[in-house]
Length: 199
Image (cartoon, rainbow, N blue to C red; front, side, top):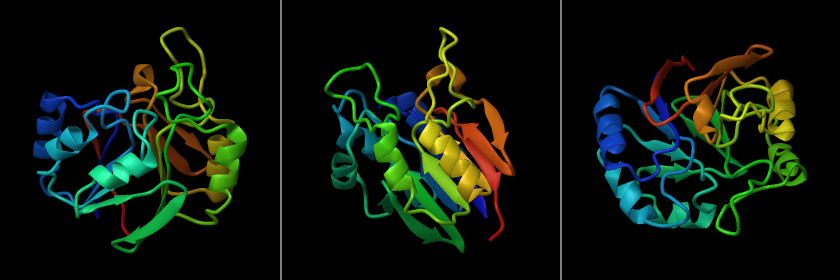
C-alpha cells in the first residue's frame, strides 16, 4: 500500500498544489497537523487539499483544534485525536496537538505530558502512529538546539512498536528520521514522503 504523508501545510497554496500533485498513485494520504495558522483560515486550507488522490487521515496540529478540523474536513477525511481507524488492512492511531505545551499563547492547542500519556494509553497496538509532535530525542530539535519532543510519545512508541510513526511540528527538524526499537520515526514537513506498507 502506497501512503503519502505530510505535515505543517500552514495554509500555503503552493505547498498544497505540490502535495496534491505528488499524491498521484497513493492509496492513502496522512496529514500530521498544522493545516492552517493560529486557528485562522482552516476551511480554506483544507479546501486546498481537496484534490488529493487518496482518502486523508488527519490529526490536528497546535494550529487547529480537533473540533475545528472535524468541521472543516471533507467527506473523504478521517480525523483522529486519541482515536484509531482501519485503512486497507492497517490499524492507524492518531494524536494531535503540541506536546508538551508550546510557548505560543492561548491560540495554541496543546496537551500536557500527563494528558498525552492518558490519551496514548488507549492504544494497545497499531501499524502506524500519526502524531503532530515528535517523540523526545528524535526529530525534535529547534534552531536553538533544544530538544522539545514529548516523553509521553517516546514512551508510547517504545511500548506499542508500530511499524511507522510520523510527526511534524518542529520545523527545524523536517525530514529528520530516527528509530525507537523497530519503529521508524519521520518528521514529515510540507513536501511529503511516500511509504510502502503491506498489511
